Length: 444
Image (cartoon, rainbow, N blue to C red; front, side):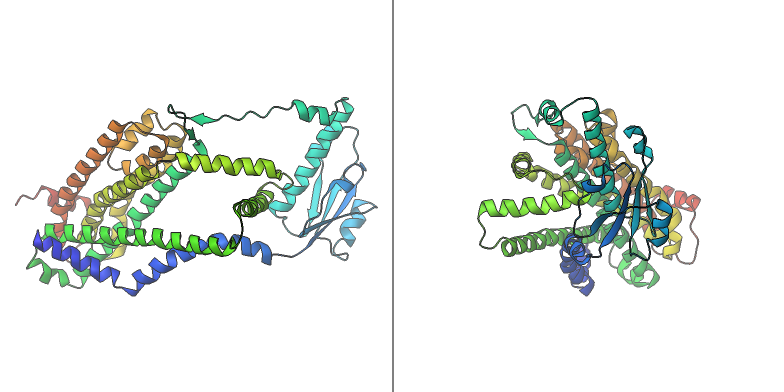
């Protein structure tokens, strides 16, 4: 056990002292923050104005299009063909043609936007939203329906979800948390599992392992490398959490400095409204609706059992990593170069890919048979169980999944050790599946 600890210590200290580890640990949260910040900054930088000429033969829509900072609508007279020829000279980005028709319903397929280049999503959505809204208004008038009265009788059903203890819950929030947790585990298994494999291959190709094996048993070396890299991964993840929290707190205090709670909510509402307008142009909500949404979101966040989710994330991250990294170590010991790993990597990654794909089905039915079996099978449980946990899982399901995962780790470690102890000292030979089967049958 002392030798395993020494290997763990060496692997851990060697990796955390590397400049690459320190750089990525610091840059990780900053890069993630930069991604979100760039959305807002790029929006401010992108100030190019697009002028759209509107030929409205119906004389209904021309004054209905609302300009914004990037899109300007100009109604013009004349025929379409001359407008298309002179459009470039007059610096129009596009020409919106709304033909005359006897029935408004025919316009649904008759409107055409001519442009020099492919128009963006925001422009097309804005035009579509405006025309649809006005066509509906005209249809109400033709049918003798007062739109104001119609608005009063419209029904907007909202399904509120609560648990049996009458606490507010949220399916979108739990789905997002579960999928994010599963995705992180999926990525970490690949990143740190591949790190173990490359570490084994490095020592093998450099012949350093020949010296190490003279003092440490192959199994002890393999376990030391696996656990050491696991601790590196956990350290990096915890540092990311701490740094992200500090960065968020610092940015929030700067942005909302000197503002009251009501002003903070108002600022957040404005940001949310801006993002909403990008996704659904023209459909911004009023302040009362936005305030109500923030109140509901706050209640939903309070209902989430974050200690359970974080605790289960750590366990299933470690369990999934330990299970797969043993196989990654075996692959690294069996080959001499990274190009040779492809044939052995594919069978290992298939269960992970299946688990990731199955997550969508699990979110739709977290209590179903597919969700249950995929959350107890050790090769898929780290991802699928993390998707299920925010929805609420019976305790015995969690315990069963944890027991099977520990058992799966023991099994894969035993399996990998038989390959590792033979392959670690074998050089210059292309290993096949038949050869691996022989190594698994060796008895000491």
